[in-house]
Image 1 (cartoon, one colour):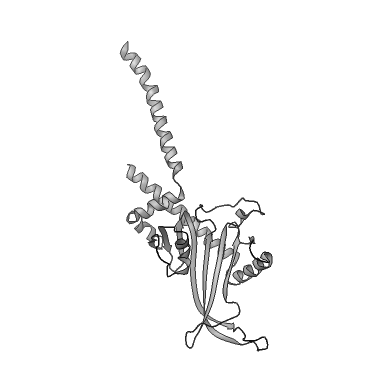
Image 2 (image 1 turned 180 degrees about the vertical axis):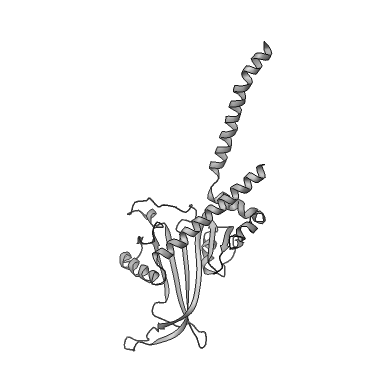
Amino acid sequence: MKKSAYRKWIFPVLVVFLLVVSFIIRKYKKQETEYSIMQAVIEKLPDYQNEIESWGYQVSVLPKMTGEPEHAGLMRYYLESAGPVLILENQDGGMYCFYYGFDQYISEETYTENMQLFPISQYDEKEYEDVLKTVRLQICKRNIKQEPLFENTADAGSKDRYDVSVLIEITAESLEDGNEVSVIGGGFFETNYCSNNFEECRLWNGIDPTSTNSYFDHNIKQEYSAAQLLGYYRKGLELQNRLIELYRERQEEDGR
């Protein structure tokens, strides 16, 4: 009789136990964020490096910095006291950076172009010269401590709608002596875009933010189309997903 009663209760107790264990596991997985996963990959990078490099990227880690970095595109992490950051660099030198998930894309291109020199006075005739033109591109989330959005559903009048900042810096050097040359179209151009399309853009600061935004957007689009900018952003999201999937695979393998 006692044995029968024991058997009667052991199955329900076992079911409850398994449900509790399942709940704990689900809760643990839910608490894992893009940030915690990227930091876990960084912590055990040797376990992931070969696989990531097989995707065609050089892998490195930017530690939390105590001094200004040499690369201007990485200044973001110094100013925000953020790190470590996982960096995947493609064959063209473009860098995809991961902190709270995919954080930013940086690239730099240098090529020869015929550009108009900046006139000393308004009466000078237009003068053009072949120069070594360098364009640095930076696409980064406006909020460094927020995961990137796969679809931005914020209202068009909200600042949250314009969740990505795009900056280009254009400089020119003389082909003869390598000295910097002042050219029309050189300088910094930065505005905020909606990551859904990189067409919607808006500024809030300044005396005339609407006019300034239009000017900056025009100069940015002279170098990169909305489709190109969106392509870089989507590639960063794709790599984030691949990193998360790789992390999950390694976790499952370790749990066997």
